[in-house]
Image (cartoon, rainbow, N blue to C red; front, top):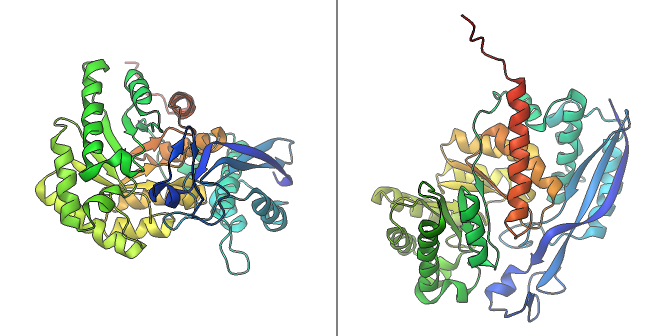
Length: 417
C-alpha cells in the first residue's frame, strides 16, 4: 500500500485563538469579544476564530485518511509556536511535506512519521504540520493493517492491549456555572478547569478563586450522585504567582490553603506560576512539588506552559518538577511523540495527562483518544470546544467504541470444564 496523492482542505477549529498576553494585561470583555489591541505577534485582534487545515492521504486502494492541523487557544504564549497561519502552513505542507508523502509506505507508523516530519533546512517543521500529518499517517497505518489506531500504537511501542478506561477531563470555558452543572450531571471524572485567566477571576489574594473552588465542591455534593467523587482540577494560568508572588513556599502555602477548603477531594492545580523560562520553571516547580509532598498535601501540581515538546516533557519528568504533565498534543507535534511523552512520564513515575486545546477538531480529538488509551495515560481532555457536551461525547464515544473493538479481539478465556 502506497500514498498516491495528498489532499488539503481548509477548516475551522472548534473555538478561538486568544492573545493570552493581552488578556493578562487586563483586556476587558464586551460580550464574547475582547476590547483593546493585541500584544502577541500575529494576532489581528485579541480573539480570532480558530482555523485549521485538513490533510488527506490517498492510498493505492482509493481510501482517504485524514488528519487536522491547527494551533492551540493561547498560541505564541509560554514558548509555543506562533499563531496558526493558514496560508503559511498550506504552502509549507504543499512544498515540503507532500513530496515526502508520495509513494511512501505508511504501514510502519513511527518510521513514516520520523521520515515525513524530519527537519527542513536544519529547522523543525511547524508543530501543527507534524500534528496533522501524524494523525493522517496513524489512520493510514490502521487502514493498511485493518486494526484500530490504538493497536498500531501498542504494536509500535511494544505495549499490551489496554485494559483500563482513561478518565476524561472536561473544561468549562467562561460559562462556568452552567458547565459545571453539566459536568456533574454527566459524572465527568475530572472537572472543571475553570478558566482562571484574569485578575478578576482570581481575585485579590486569590479569594475569588478560593470561593469558586468551594462552590464547585459544594455543587458536586448537592447535585451529584452519592458515590460521585471527581478530581477537581483548576487551571490558573500563572495567577497564583502573579498575585501571591513567585516564592515557591508562598505558592505552596496558598495551594495547601485551597486544598484545606475542600476536604475529601483530590485537587489538581495547573500552571500555578510562570517563571519566565523552561529552566526557571523546572527549578521552581520542583521546589513547589517537594514542599507539597513533604507536607503530605493532597494537592498536585500540573505543568502546561513552558512544557511543550517531548524534550520539555523529559526535562520536567526527570527533575520531578511536576506531579502531572499536560502533554498538550498540538504543541508536542507528532502523535508518535505524544505516545513517547506518556511512556517517558510513566518511566519517571510522573502522571501523564493527554491534553490539547479547545481549538482542535473532532478528527484530532479522536486520534488522541487512541494514543491516550494505548499508552494508558492517567487522564485525557474532552475536546474540542468549550461546550462540555460536544467534547465529552466525541472523546467518550470514541473511547467506548475503541474498547468494544478491543474486547472483541482479546483472546477469550475457555471457561468450559
